[in-house]
Length: 151
Picture 1: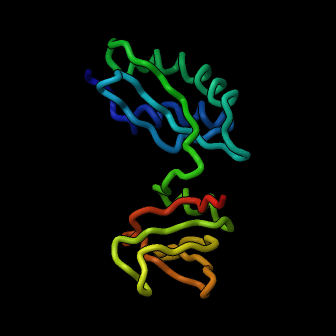
Picture 2: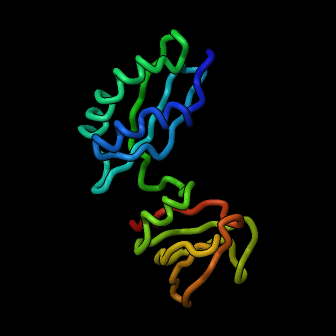
């Protein structure tokens, strides 16, 4: 199935998402299932009602855009999830002040795993406050960073 790049689809839908009060944080085509999944986030979290509201808001504009060039597809709208990896600088900035876990490609300070409170992003480095003080990690050296889920 021939499809438009997700970047183009997301750019087309971004103003609608903003009007609904959500942000499209990721999108993916699934060729096998012939579906487009839009992952959203919002201040205060995402619930089923918000997913439905967003789905209804983008349904018509997506039909006009015709991202599959006439082929049928299924549109899915979903929460990005609490454990979603940070992909952009905006993700890091959005979660300043929250506890995060960071996994590195190569050890720093003897470990590939670090956790602490996210202090920010500065000159291409992520800053966290851990139990043993402030630490800096180059963005390029981070394999995965996400919110720390404590049970």
